[in-house]
Length: 372
Ligand SMILES: NC(=O)c1ccc[n+]([C@@H]2O[C@H](COP(=O)([O-])OP(=O)(O)OC[C@H]3O[C@@H](n4cnc5c(N)ncnc54)[C@H](O)[C@@H]3O)[C@@H](O)[C@H]2O)c1
Image 1 (cartoon, rainbow, N blue to C red):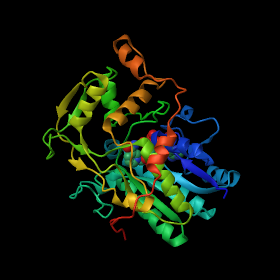
Image 2 (cartoon, rainbow, N blue to C red):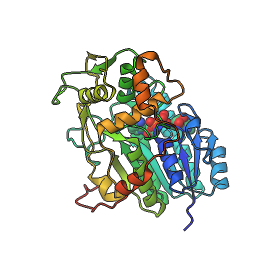
Image 3 (cartoon, helix red, strand yellow):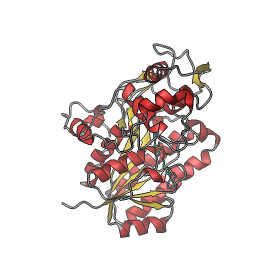
């Protein structure tokens, strides 16, 4: 069966580019729509069609759908960052809701009936129950989470009204990078722990501030569920297979089901690099949940997927390799030994066979938590 093209919004970004690369390697026809507000166009293979434009630009979206026989949409484009969203909420509602709705409406009118959306664990706010199932109360604590949840509600309603199969994939903490070092996390400003701590350890930024050492967790620092970005990419392919045949997967947590504390992350980085991560402790951030770990049973049941690159050290090694290959990375004499060890040649081929075999096997649908 020849499959129709896939429109990937935000495909020049961190998670979208990993998905786009994997999808192309799996024989999919991908067209990326990205305004390059935070993405890196150079990360995409030349064989992949990149259109520079806005998700809310109806004419551009229509042109892409017609020109490339698009049959489904994987919608990564969006704004992220809890703290920034408190300072400038309008931008978050504009991109994550208003423009996203325009995109959804445009593709619906053109007859597209398969839509995946990048949602977030931030929709849960401060959950009482950990690991968090999809049925947990939805109570986001900042405009980033609220805007993502608003679009989830819209997608669910529009999907039901017009027969669109959809999925809202709720990511926990994406980390790692493609193992050949060719795609890196590249947010500006960067707010995520692993890249910030790597930069601090490499002397590329001042010591990081750890928010709170008195949380009700085993070592007093926050616990998060870090998921390798390659695992996320595979989960999207599984979800895409489902929505393309008309199966709505609904909201699905994507995590490993296992938490790591901030102290654990810093200790693992120190052991990978052979040098400490300079850090200080600050007060807790308001609204920061002490623990945020995914209940992953629904992902297993509805996607037949589970994370396979679950070692924190692996995620950090992959992130380190990719971080040092970014064009803006400056190789200085004080990190010469580390650079020698971790800068792998660009031509190193990714071992996708191993990934595929490990993550494409089917898992029995054992007692998935119900979702209405
Ligand atoms: N990284 C995480 O840990 C994480 C966690 C939860 C949810 N998410 C969500 O996943 C998605 C991807 O995250 P990421 O980490 O890859 O972010 P990213 O910033 O690296 O990628 C987002 C991409 O979307 C593009 N974009 C933004 N606004 C656009 C617009 N109006 N039109 C077209 N393109 C636009 C950007 O240029 C960028 O390439 C986002 O929607 C984010 O909210 C990410």
